[in-house]
Length: 273
Figure (tube, rainbow, N blue to C red):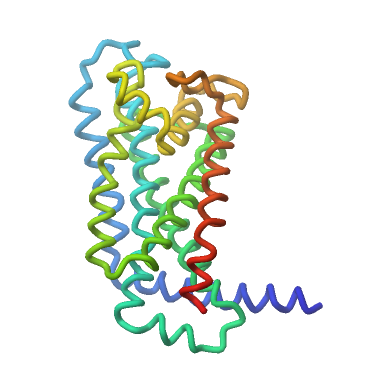
């Protein structure tokens, strides 16, 4: 009885704090629009740039646009999740977080859970918009089972990156430093992945970086789902250190996500106490 009451109160607090974030988004929808426009521009421009590439040049066959689609979808979710710490940081700087910390909350972790719920929803909406745009451009649709694979993979990636961003929001002194980290990390992680080119096209050192990049572990299962070749035991990544199946890529994302949440818990407990 006590446990069910505690869960109900935690859920109520989380939903109430999440509603506040969604109201902010409703009043300032530029975050949602920009999060869709930027990857859409990448999808259109890069797809057009390599539109005349020979068919079958890229793994799985087909056009470069179909190859690129999975990378842009993951980049969309990654960029949104990387910004997860900004609302918390602004709450810190404007003093609203201090008001929450003295409020009679059942659990102060509802502050973190609300941010996770908000960013996860925002990331999925933006990613689905890019998927619809890719379909409109003729780059395909993953289908029923494939769509579940795409959404599940994105959820794992978003959870991991959100945990990292929230940790930075509590550890860094201000929003200038957080924005600087976001700008520095964003594009290098994109280019050091298989979003724009397969590992076989990369120099050795870059291939190693790409094969260790969490974005790659998310891109390749989604790419396989788009190509209609998805199977958990199918090899989706030929890395320099060996071949990885879709199940292994998803397991690595799961371990990364769980590990990040566990590692930031002491920091959150200290900052929310």
